[in-house]
Image (cartoon, rainbow, N blue to C red; front, side, top):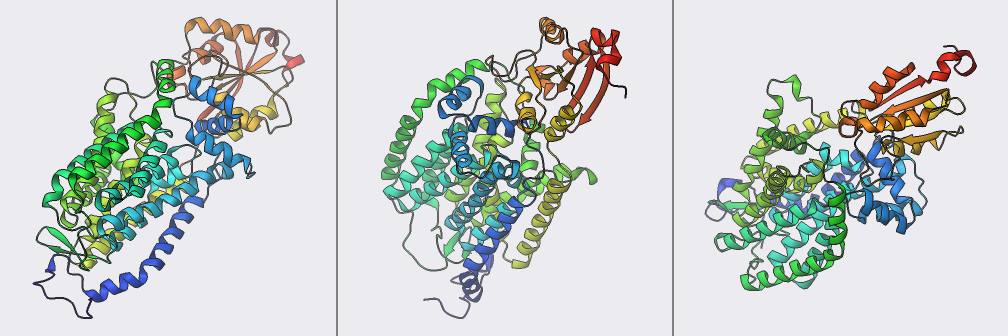
Length: 552
């Protein structure tokens, strides 16, 4: 039974000197604290949600999701790289009738992001008790990295949620067993694989994490599950309330269950494998550069506090990375070895694996590794909670939250997305009859069309070097031979527009724009965020400018 007086040091030594009165306070405050944290997570994800224009990838998500399911599947397999789960979910979301404007299409991701806050709390409570759970959930609620992708109509919020659920069910299965936990783990992991190809690295990380957990659990101490705080003895933790060891499941049975789940996951994912191979054939080359050590530094910085103005302090980015990793490593002081090893492997293995693969075929992106942010945050939370003097942890937590709010301020008030709404409005307002709008790269027409279709004036639109969705890759590369197509498309027209965006891969040397400058007369240009718009007069317009081009 829990007494009202603090236990003696012989029973609970002073390493994390948490008296029972504080335990009771956490017991009473758990529901209130969780509700408050969820409210914060909701506000950070809904605030300013629809103020920015949809950028290219978001517009593509809406375009695909609005197609009939058969055509949607065809577009995904022939022209895209992710699996179909997010597009299917967005398709159903749009059918519910919230509209397809920016706020409504992003709202789905925002709600998924709020759910991830709850899952983070559950995982934190599972590995370290209520204090770790609430601290981790608060850090997740104000994480600029997770807020950013919870405000984007893409699959990353869904991927993070499914991977978080997979981790939670796996922890439950390892520590408590039960068919329900293993089934939940199997299903959520499979769904994650149907959300993003990068989830394969998550599965690899989970496999290594399970191996470490099983190898070290013979030397572990009991892990608190629903207890209200933790106490340390030497370098191990003890539960506040004496309970049966929840990790006493025979290793052999756990291994058999885990292997069975892996077979089931493989069989459930197998139908997608032919389509994955087809997507790989379509994209022999990609726009992502091979990662370097600086890429790893940038990743950890993004996970810690993306968009923080680090340049205001010498070595600011390195300092943020060092503090984040330092707090995460402090989690070893307050977590049992199996749990710490599990979380560390879940964080590091996917990063190392994707980094190695990207040396051959570059695919390394911070957002594709969004699922490693949860074990990273859990380790930081455990490190903060583990200080024996509570005020040290409180100061550190306050500092991290404050820095994250600085980053959130920049996300809301400074960092903007591509201004396709203004680009479409400007061209539609200024365009004359029989003018053509050309797009470099071709897929950017999808973002333009999303807003141009809302304009009353119809515009004829074509892509360079090919019309969108007429060839395999969404971003075919511009070659010298493709310039003849530009001349052919504008032949006989008084003037035309050239819209340039995302050309780092499709037209890195700006062939189309330089050719237009050399051969045609540039009438006007306008540069918006992420989009450049040029207007040219053709040879006919140069001979008879007054008949076709109004005086400026």
